[in-house]
Structures are given as C-alpha cells and as structure tokens.
Image (tube, rainbow, N blue to C red; front, side, top):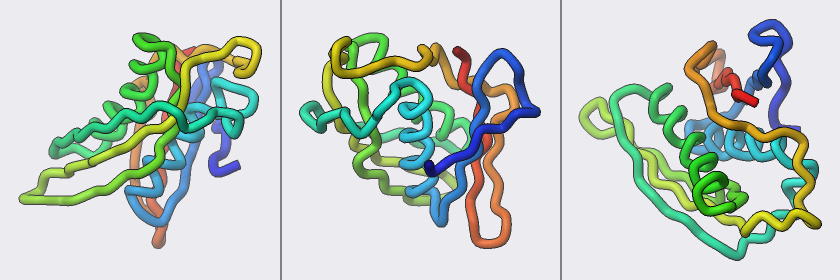
Length: 143
C-alpha cells in the first residue's frame, strides 16, 4: 500500500497520508489511494477509457484538491473508475501546471466491489509539505 491511514484527523471520514519523491509521484499515489479506499481491488480496473486534462494555479494544495476531485467528478458524472496513468508537472512564473492522463473503465457492479463511496476530497486537514527529500500529502475523504 502506497499510503497510510491517519487516525487522529477525523473520525467519521477517511484520512490518508501519502509520501513520494516528486509532485508527479505524489499525485499518482494519491489518486490510487483515493481509488483504493473506494474499491476493494483497484487492480481490477481495466485501462479502457482515458481522460486527459490540465489544471494550473499558484497553490499546490488547491491544485491537488482539484485533481483528486476530478477523479470523483468522473465517477459521479460518467460512472467511471479512473486511476492516474501519467502526471507531469511544471512550475512557470510561480504557477504550478499539472497535465494528467487518467485511465479506467465504467463501473461494473459485479466486478468492482465498493468499500465506501467517497463523496468529496475536503479542505479539512489538507496539507502538502516536504520532509527531508519526500513530499507528503495529508488528505481527508468525505464518505
């Protein structure tokens, strides 16, 4: 598992901590953590449908928040379970730019066994920081 559950942030929702060597890896691992909390076996999600996008902003935490909520948007609006396939970051004039490619498939009730339905990524307790050589994200999922 590429993340750990945090017990002391919230009691009613799910809080996770993800560690990575870069922002690219942090976003990929966080998207996988989100999907891992929702479905029993995210490895069963076949990469049949692709969604690409670019988000930008001057606050990395808001960009991270927006990215994870994009994954939830596709789940709710198009019944898609998507995992981050490729992420690339650039910092231009103090603005973060994140290009992403998500891969997955339509929800199949017999194939995808849901653990919980994450309704949203919240701003409560959301933080991204660097410790030693690792980027760390702490996030609360509203279930």
